[in-house]
Length: 89
Image 1 (cartoon, rainbow, N blue to C red):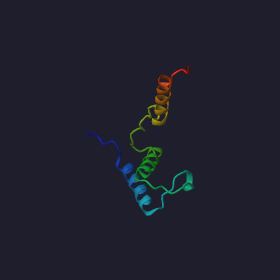
Image 2: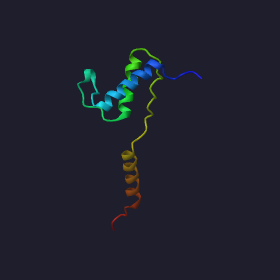
Image 3: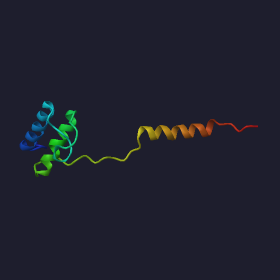
Image 4: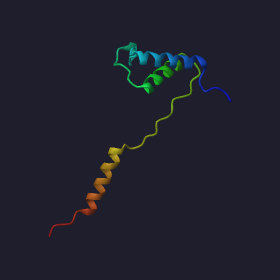
């Protein structure tokens, strides 16, 4: 079975995770953003940099457009209200 990520790409990710643990990793261009706090974010930064360098990294997963929980709840409430209300006599 072929490797999904190249060895050099995984080294880039490893470097970013180490920097995150030290508290040196920052988000944004040129490291001007806030400190990276989560491990997932560090991995994402490392893999995106490896991708920019042209290393073997799988494509980003496509985001499916789904409604958020809040929006779903709102629509449920609206439908409930319509059915429950009784006309005043």
